Image (tube, rainbow, N blue to C red; front, side, top):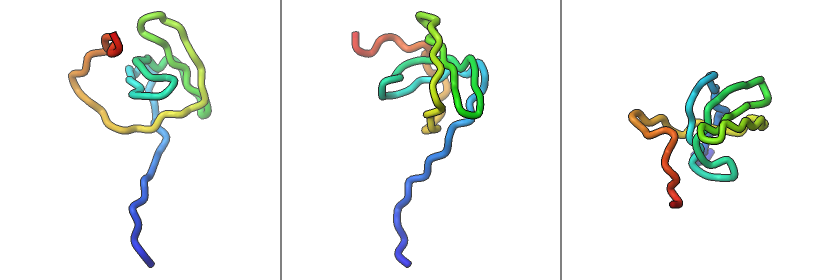
Length: 76
């Protein structure tokens, strides 16, 4: 059998109060985890304090120490 390169994804196990940065997509930006269930995640914007509940969608890519949070607007 031939060996292939396979990309493996695992759902990320969030923690309440965790500060995250979504690098791209419609939810791009800084968020704080303020609620979660087996199927849903509630994130809060650190600037507007608005909360949004979504189906779980994030996958772990990397963790960085010493990062600015919330980030300054990169498009300005």
